[in-house]
Length: 137
Image 1 (tube, rainbow, N blue to C red):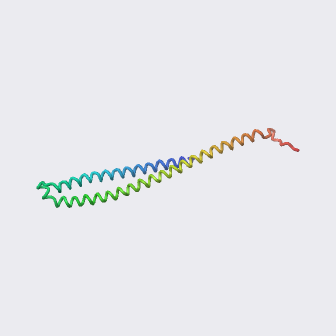
Image 2 (image 1 turned 180 degrees about the vertical axis):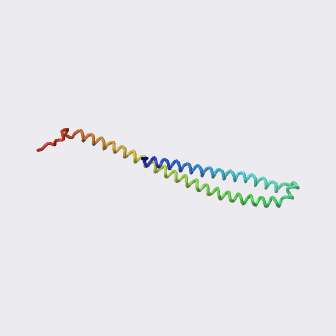
């Protein structure tokens, strides 16, 4: 049978995996926002360009820019959710790790106490009469 600290150790490993998954999702969202920012810069540059072709497409660029900004706002919200989830998972992992350490200390303390009790029992057993007869007075 597994001890409490071993069970908690497994839970800590699972929790740390969930934390890494949340970090990965956050990094992916941040990368998407960074790529989107680059696209927004390109569209803004095209809108400000003096080239006659870009002037003709300025209405298209404006609507496209609006959609890009809207998508950026959506990704910002998703990123904030991922940040909160990552922090929550990290806090859970930290609490489980502390519980695991406390359980391990308690188990070590109990094992040490049991060793002392065994030594006491052995010492008492050595002093008992061998024949089993008790002195009568």
